[in-house]
Image (cartoon, rainbow, N blue to C red; front, side):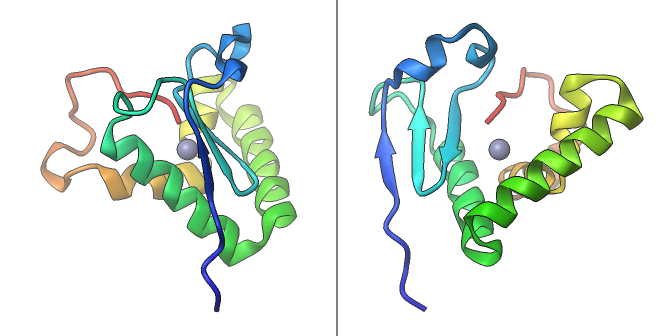
Length: 115
Ligand SMILES: [Zn+2]
């Protein structure tokens, strides 16, 4: 299969929106938007967003977003907590797990970034 073309945009205005402030990166279809300028985006954040691109390749753009929102809402009903609902979306779990060394899993002292 042909590799999809992914466009990366740095220092995107969308992160100035109040509800986007906790986030540092987001996939919008085949675009990856980052809050920070080029050179200040950590490799692990880029890797996280590239895993979402792989998920979009596997599922298709629309099915990916429909499943993402569905799983978030199911989690929100279950946990009644946005952050927990978000982190337990299976697509997010896969993306976070791929970036986390096994020895520090579940025991990370520094604040984790949302993406
Ligand atoms: Zn993510």
